[in-house]
Amino acid sequence: MGRRKSAKQIEKELQYARAREAYNPPVREDGASTRKNPLIAVAYKPIQIAAGETAKKYKVQASQKSVVFFGQTALNLVDAGSEDPLPRGAKPAKVHATVSDDSPNIIRALGSNRPYKRYAPGNRGSNTQYSYTAPLSIQSAAALDNEVKTVFNAVKGKLGGAYGRVWFTPEYFVLTGSGE
Image 1 (cartoon, helix red, strand yellow):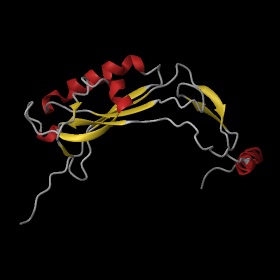
Image 2 (image 1 turned 90 degrees about the vertical axis):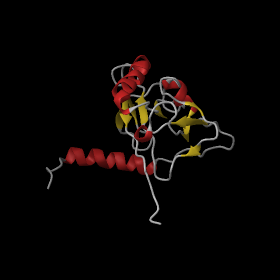
Image 3 (image 1 turned 180 degrees about the vertical axis):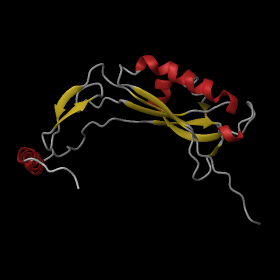
Image 4 (image 1 turned 60 degrees about the vertical axis):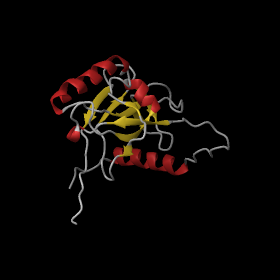
C-alpha cells in the first residue's frame, strides 16, 4: 500500500497520459541520417590466463570511437591478427564512460510532455554520442588497480563536468573442457 494520491496529482498524470496517447512520432524518411558506430577488431588478453606478453590473445570487436576516446595504448589493445575469437559465453573486461554537460538542461519528453533533466551534451536529436564502452586488456592481476586508474585518469578531462562518469566491469571468462 502506498500513500494516497491527491486529486491534483491524479489530474497531472491524466494530462501526461492524454498527451502521450495523442503523440504521433514522425515517420522516419528514407535516406535519413543515422549515427554510424563502426567496429574494429582488436587483440584482447584475458586477465585470468595473462602471464606476460606471450599469453594467448583473443580477437574481440570494439567500437572505433570508444577506442579513440579511451586511447588504444591506455587500453593495452593491439590490432587483431589471426587470433581466435573469445570462447562462447566469455565477456572481456570493459571500461565505460558517460560524458555530460557542465549543467543539465530541463526539457520536456516528446510523448507525454513531462519535464525531465537531460545530462547529455548537445541538443536532443543531435546524434551526439555521450556513452563509450571499450575492452580493457589487463597485463597481470597485480597491475589491475594501476591499469584501471591509468585509463580513468586518461579520460577524466573528457567527461565534461561533475555529472560525467567512468567505471570498470570485470571480465567473465569461461574455461571449458570435455568429459572424454
